[in-house]
Image (cartoon, rainbow, N blue to C red; front, top):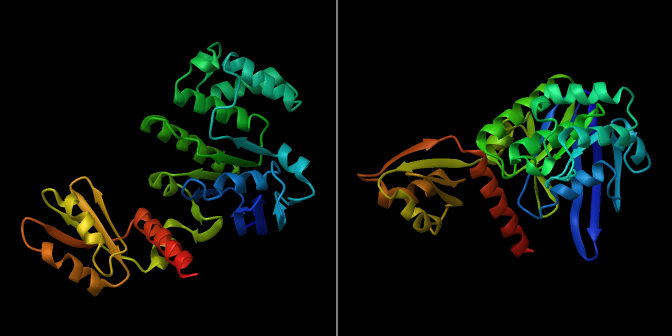
Length: 307
């Protein structure tokens, strides 16, 4: 598979804050790669470095077959970037915004291109509405139309579904998969585990370092985690007590259930032993991505304090 992104040793600091640390990432053409991590982990900075909006302190490699340090203008022309906050003109209509974007890119047959974008994203009937009057879901569609109007080969999405209702999120992801099916490469940052699982593969960044990379199944398998699911009345109330037990890396309540995870099965069984009897019921289950990422964050904290 040809890589749309193949960058190695990426570093970026702002003053004395080292935001991106030796990040190396490869993304295959036509793949949807999820980019996960807590706030401040370095996701947005990495996206901006890859498309030439920021200059790296160090690093080498190619984006769309071009040197990502010296050929930034050519990369920008072939990249769509959808920012976390809505960045189009609120006092212009949907059609006016798209027409303006078409002019910025110097597109020929602008009206035809705009009409096609309106049709593909279901915006035709709303073309005369002011962008500022749209709901979050419709603003998201407009932003996606603007980011893909010039027919990019690479699409960078920075937490595109934040604050959007579940139905709009599902429709948005259907559109992303349709674009990928046509050959577009997508790198998307997100906080949502269900969205991560809709990606072809994922990367997890923490404290500026890419600490996990692969498919969801591969990352879960490599974690070595063992997880027990407990159910019963008010079972969530025992999660704090479980977290304090030896061998427990995480205990999280999910409605009427609690997930307890660690790498030592016998230690976990000993930890949940006081709550083994009725009315509680326990079974070993497959760890979730959330369980794994909680473990990864705990490991990084332990390493930081150990150093």
